Image 1 (cartoon, rainbow, N blue to C red):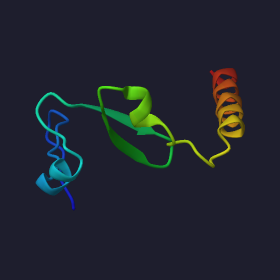
Image 2 (cartoon, rainbow, N blue to C red; image 1 turned 30 degrees about the vertical axis):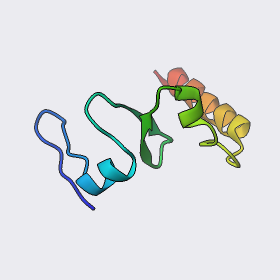
Image 3 (cartoon, rainbow, N blue to C red; image 1 turned 90 degrees about the vertical axis):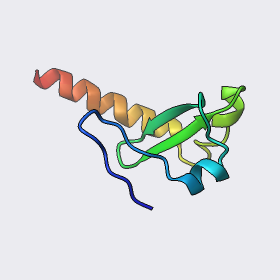
Length: 78
């Protein structure tokens, strides 16, 4: 499925995805950017439960330290 983005930065969630993930009026979405991909995750009434397991097996500590080093190096150049 493919959608486009309007001048105002808006896009449409395809009906099949809205139905599958029960995304209706008033549902909040979280945009997760890992530097390579963007994920859109609907937030349930229990946001901790809805995000649980997203970082499994990704060596998050190492990635965090790498990102902090990149930020530090970027700040030093400014």
